[in-house]
Image 1: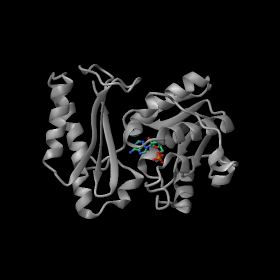
Image 2: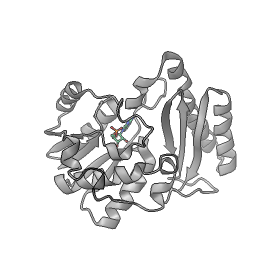
Image 3: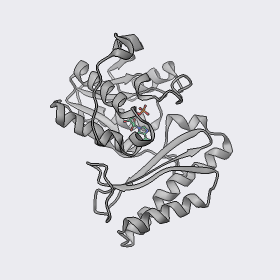
Amino acid sequence: MGLVPTMGALHPGHASLIRAARAACSQVAVSLFVNPTQFGPNEDYARYPRSFDADCALAEREGADVLFAPPVEELYPNGPASTFVEVPELGDRLDGASRPGHFRGVATVVAKLLIAAEPDRAYFGQKDAAQVAVLRRMVADLGFAAEIVVCPIVRDPDGLAISSRNVYLSASERAQALTLSRAIGEVAMLVARGERRAGVLIAAAREVFASEPEVRVDYVEMVDWSTLLPVETAAPGTLFAVAAFVGKTRLIDNAILQ
Ligand code: AMP
């Protein structure tokens, strides 16, 4: 069975995961759960977009066999006193550094889903590249049988990585948000031309951000994808990742360098 964990508000990025699962697995389960434990106290849990009926339609259209949309009390029967899964070190890097406790919530809920569904494969997007690193480590450390399958980032035609949070953006913020994919594109272009030095690549990405002062950079990092530790020199498989605030909305984007 293939499992596709999501927080709902399904879009073409989620659809690509369901399609990948459909192509490889006899049964496909999609979970819809806005997981409270991965949101910080001042984050957008309460206003996170929820669109259950449209999600059901999309999941069915893409070939899901099972939809799992539990109430919060079902996954956290003991409330905030639940048992948690922590992935040390990795869980505090990149988004984990900016969002303390975020990956503890992610690892916990994905562990619960893997225990409940016992999938052969679980599907995640490269869009959340640090999440992939954390979950790969968790699966290895806890000995889950599921294979983690990572699917490419799905983008709007102008390059913006599709995200459920893009609905928060005003028209002018939507235009500013393109700075993230422009920075990523600039770095990929420099790497294709032979540039490998982290300092040069990070500076180039920061220069793209500097051209759009309304966008507030959270991080620009070049790291080993399995440890999330900074590297000096890009190698095939190195992760180049950015996070930035556009208005109040925090967006992420990345590339796996060639
Ligand atoms: P979310 O509902 O945001 O938790 O995302 C559920 C899964 O969909 C995660 O594994 C994400 O990485 C993946 N995902 C979200 N957006 C995209 C995208 N634009 N392209 C590919 N995968 C995505």
